[in-house]
Amino acid sequence: MVAPLPHPIRMDAVHILLPPSEGKSAPVSGPTLDLVSLSYPELTGPREAIARELSAVSARPDSLAILKAGERTLPEVEAQRHLGDLPCAPAYQVYTGVLYEAARLGSDDAVTIFSGLFGATAGTDMIPSYRCSMNVSLPKAGPLKTFWRGQLKDHPVLEAASSGATVDMRSGAYQIWNPPGVWWDVRVRDHTGKVITHMAKHYRGLLTRALLDAKSDEVADVARTLGDVSVEVKGNRHHLTLVPAV
Image: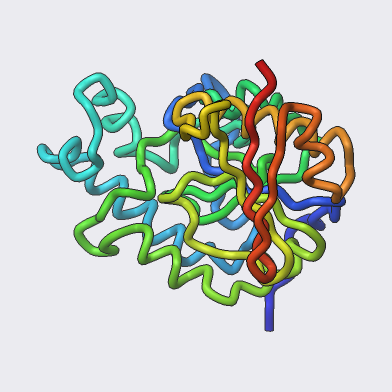
């Protein structure tokens, strides 16, 4: 039997999937991490396993190498040796990267965020700042992409949350679960057809904000407010290409 959610998922016109961001704002105060209170409670056990191992790895002399982190992140890695004691804030406030700056998420915005530490959470879930990307391989859990792909396979709550159109803003490392119904992925190119890399995050953030404000499942029409749009349909999957207006 599937355990009930601690709070209902709001069914909007579209369900938006996001990656986390490398850039984070560490809360200076707030409650400590309560994994049981997070959305998708069926993932509590796997989250506990990854959180324990991440804390242990962060205390090792080779922690930066394992976590594929630079020297400048050492204070963050050292802090998460005591991950369960760190103050938490809503995920949409903790993540501060380019996409999140453009998306300007708030407490009323229903999104699902995929991450190496938690698997999948809501934007309003209370989390600490942490350093653990999906590209990491932990000594016990192994590659986190493989670990979470196995945990999220045929996940019943995620399937329920994705009724209607789903728009996937995730980067490749976080595409570990595909919606069962109609869904869209988003590519951003310049006017010559060249893939835009860094600024793609900005435009995915703008599109996230536009879709949340529009409350419409006419994804292509909403995207056209940001530039030229083309769509390639393959079964349930819609490849949307956005060329931002200059």
